[in-house]
Image (cartoon, rainbow, N blue to C red; front, side, top):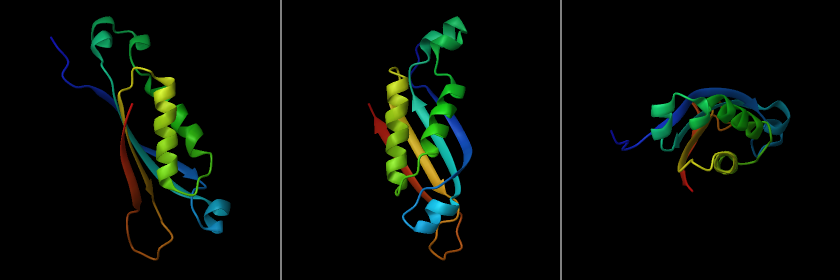
Length: 122
């Protein structure tokens, strides 16, 4: 059996953070949702059933949580920091698809949020 494509995905991670350009966003903060998909070869884990042979999603969550707690003006910057942190922690990670949604962006619109999505390649 040959693995064509494989990834681990964390969906709907919810955070309260202080990202934004406006002073009020840095003081009060807002709600965010993060989705992440990390492409890597799972062949070894398929055979061994050993957590050391895969990307531990609990460790990935801790990385994202740490990055989300450091304020940034732009979601694009947060996306880049998440990708950089994932690649640093997991050398086997090939691609990190990161999506961050600001749930209530300050633009006087009735919407579900403003989202930045980026596919980052090592």
